[in-house]
Image (cartoon, rainbow, N blue to C red):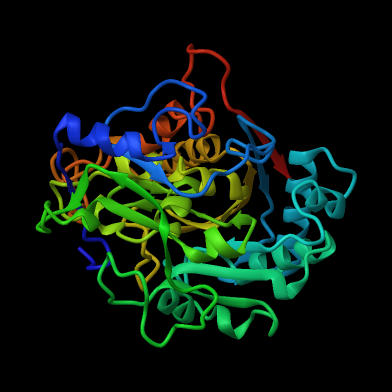
Length: 410
């Protein structure tokens, strides 16, 4: 396993201790983030300044809705076509919003004065990552809606991964970019030497998610191990975020999509969620982080890059591109649960075509036909569990209203 994915073990603390923490917190993960719903389960609390309700709060403006645009011209023989990606982007956004044109679609979410983050996924480069062409067209869309380029921040958790994916070579000079964390730093570190004046690096001491989950081998008596702090960029700088996740299998979470792009890209101390084969707690970690009121209110638009995907052995792509494929699609949603449920079905369909078990049946302790599984079980339960927290729509056949998945081919 890569040392980028060490993780945590679930440790239940005493009920009274957890209840005391919950009582001290202004926000509760598992119930209502604003105190207007049922009480939370013990052991998960979200701390931070008060966040007023917004029409953009997840699941956003279009709950339960996913638009998929397929365009075979987006990638051919390893070359991506920016014009085709732009045409697909415009069509997807107008279909999602019902706007007459792409500019009006962007204005559905953004306006002059907004300060906007673009959360990218560099890992998987060069085969499956947030495409340069898509990121550049997203910047153009934000500008068309009146957002100034100086108010756009392209970010990921690790700056080094952005450098590897060469974003610095293609981004406009006045668009700022970077990472929340210095590579190799301790998981609970808040500040980073050499990044004092960096507008992106570092974490907010007052905004965090506290849960009964500690990295395997760390001291359970150290209170810092129970907290994941939000990046200062997200709490202090941007007021909205466009998320550009990728269509990818994931070694521990099952799939890595919109939900995991929010959870693991926004906070520190994420390694506790998947440390080794027998302490895989992504199902717990991802929904509880995404439910933090600050994150829930700011991730207003999800654009999944499915131009090229990874159906096995993800999220990092192999040098030879094995288990990657040209998929030639973009997917659009405000609802990350609905989007990830559609993504899971797409990856499972590809896996079946390739003679592999579905994601939920994969793992060292279940089915491992290729010998690369690193976790005993990697069932993508986080998608359904995020739905139970009201973060989006996840309903199965025969259980009620289904996710509305519109497929468009251009």
